[in-house]
Image 1 (cartoon, rainbow, N blue to C red):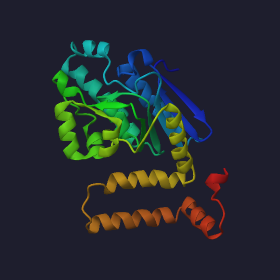
Image 2 (cartoon, helix red, strand yellow):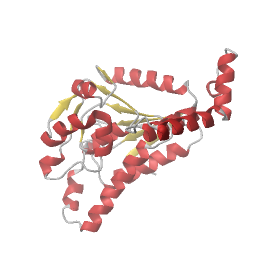
Image 3 (cartoon, rainbow, N blue to C red):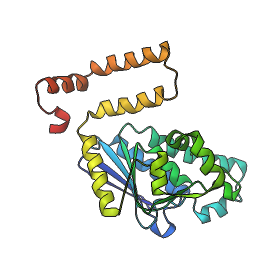
Image 4 (tube, helix red, strand yellow):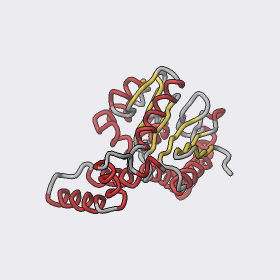
Length: 262
């Protein structure tokens, strides 16, 4: 079905793997379309409760593919806008997935690859992973990925790394908030991802989707009457839901909720 990605369902875990190692998993129009379709496939799968985004080969994602950039150099403004919108759709699909997402970063992530990491809920990388926002080196800018990158690392660090296009290490990515954890090697990476996934699967799946939506609505908003009312309405609705009632009942009865038993 796909030529540039692999999708796998392992019980409640969905895995989407970028699979162009010979091109360092760099973006082209096919990879962008397939990642978007693969995410939607895993979102719709009734068994999947969490999604891991991973890659084969030495690089997580090297940004834009050179051959794609050569083709794009001859695009009309309308064709360039189409490509930009397709990448924007990919990132918004990943960011707004109702299921928790984990980036498994085993190697360099440049340009749009940083956008993928930033759009995931949780990111874990190996010590030797490297990152860079390289667009200005090419006389362009990281416009489409910018909302997700700025949300992850803040405006101050975005100013430095978007303007300088410097490479930065996994430890720096951890320090500025792009990744949540760094580990020595890929064996440690799989172990750390597994621990995070195990933690995710203990929680109410609908509550996690609601929590993601809550963060998007509340983030950056003033704590005013509108925000207070919005949060009150949301907890009231979720508390009255079947999952909310089951979770509270299971807690009071000192048993596991049904989403763990199932």
